[in-house]
Each structure stands twice: as C-alpha cells, then as structure tokens.
Length: 307
Image 1 (spheres, helix red, strand yellow):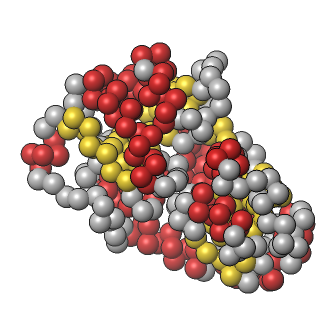
Image 2: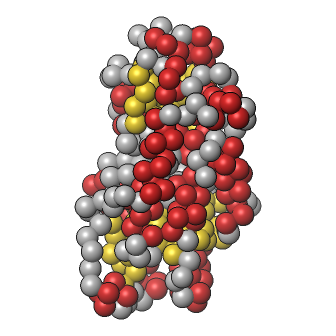
Image 3: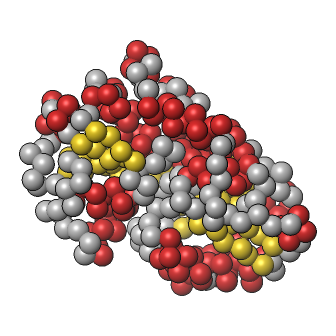
C-alpha cells in the first residue's frame, strides 16, 4: 500500500482514533455489580450486522444451547456499533463477543480479546467471505472503472469504521487505485450496518456503497432487494470468516469449554446452528482457531495506519 495514500486519511483516521481512545460505550450495555457479572453468568456481545431484534431472535436457540452445554446463565447484549462491543470487553462488561475480523484485531489490541472460533468448511478449513461494492441502476455507474473515474461526483457509504468488509478492505482497495474516499468522493458516510449500507444504495440515498457478500445475498433472498436494484461492481479477495472471541483473562478451562461448545453445536443442536447461521453456506460449521488466523487483516490495518 502506498504510504503517501495512508497520510491522506483525514476524517477516517479521526474516527479510528475515537475507537482506540475508547471514549464511549453503548448505553445498551448496562453495567452490573461485580457479583452479578462473575457468578455463573456468561455475558455475550453481538455486533450490528442486521436488525437488532431479528438478531436476538435468531440467537435465542444458541443462547439456550449454550446455557445447557455450559451450565451457566447467558446474558446477551447487542450494540449500536463495533466500538461499543470492543469497549465493553475492555471494561470487562462482556466475556464473549462476535466480532468482525478487523474489529477483532482492534479488540485484541485494545481489550486483550482472544479469538477461539470461526466459521469453517466441511473439511475443517477456515471459511471465507468477500467485501463488495454495489451501486443502483440510476447512478450512472456500470463498472468499478466508472466509480474510480468519477469519484468527485459520487456519494458513497461504508458500514462502520471498524468493519472489515464494510470499510477496511474496500477502503484499502480504493486507496490503492488512487481514490481517497474521505476527500475524493462528493460525500462519504457510515451507514451503521451491512444491510443499512445496501439499502441506502438501493433507495438512492447514495450512489454506491460497501458491504459484505453475505449481507448482499441476504437482502436478495429476503426480497428486500433484487440484483437489478443492487448491482455488484467489485468483489474483494477472500477474507477469513468473523471470529468469536473471549476476554484474554477468562479462566483457561472456561475458554476451552466455550470453544468446544461451539465446535459441537452442529452435531448437538443443528437447529440452533441453522437458526443463527442461516446466512452461511451449506455444511459450514465452527472450527477452533487462534489469533494468527487474522494476521492478514492485522497487516492490512497496519499498512493503512489504523493500528
């Protein structure tokens, strides 16, 4: 990555400084007494990839499975952004979190998070997904070359400053092609979620936007959009699936039990797995991992000056 491009980050670097400074924690992560937080209760944080109510509904069967498998009460929290989940773990308000790859890297740096599980293939390899850039038919953009050539006339949406496929990867690509999103686009915004970014493009609120392919497929399959509404003009190289991470100072034996519970879920409670991971490809499962799985993402973050 061209270092001269990194120096041009401006607004986005300020946003990342907010993340690393840890200046806010979402109000939805209510503080509890030390006793309530530590005795027989495991607190799990979820990232905002879709509507929060729908996410909690899908996670319900997983919560029941984990309570049975671990013999512990599970408390589940959703947050309005990635930063809130990172800061909640840093403040010891959650024990386990579903991060995106880049938000995990930031959480490992700032909150001593430790990746233990991710999505895997039937053969036990780490599964992957992609970032994509989409546009709508009235934007006048028919290919990625159109977007690059007419950046000053284009309004664009990313997902979240700490999103891998919704910010880090597409931003890095645009910079490598000589387009600084913060200064070269007509306007640039963060939609807050993958679905929100896609729908902002569909509605014409922005000309183009970044999201992950899973979110794109979900919008198409649900009927919220069609391939004619959202046109994919760029797709990234494969990205390792998002991890489940625990607090680094959690009891080692509990970490192993949590890891094993997720590994066993497809066999012990396939309906819970299916309910929560319905967006996954057929035959995907959970596989045990460690921090090294996300070294690729960490190096990109470093090259862009985020870490």
